Length: 202
Image (cartoon, rainbow, N blue to C red; front, top):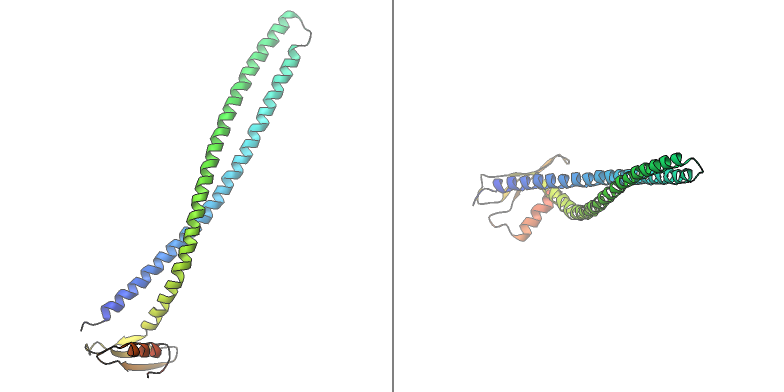
């Protein structure tokens, strides 16, 4: 019969790996929270920029209307022609400005749509992480409790054909020996768990 030392070592490594995996998932959850905060900041900047663009368009429209009113005011013919040229130049500048601002608004809308889609993906990922944590955490806690119990056992490897050893419980300052014999029956294993948990061997 092979010595069980390797199995215990592999079990300990499995517990450590499970813990690392759990903590990495918790870091992912924190990353999701940070990205949500950044998304809100981007949305606020987009809204502020839209307000600025709308105000600029209103100001340019007002300038065009004012120029048109001034152009109809009775003046010498040459002055009127100059006013018309000025209005046309102002109108062209305003149109170019409006086109530029409209392009910026469209770009902001594209960015907003991308942020919304990314947010939906993050929300879905956050839900998956929460579900995974709810599933994995109890399992890890249970594994840790088993690890805590098993780590109390000092196996007697000299008796390769028997399951025997000493249970060291520092919290109770005592040591209990056990010997389950050659056949580890279901009752024998339960008896061993009872000893580990602080009970008495039957």
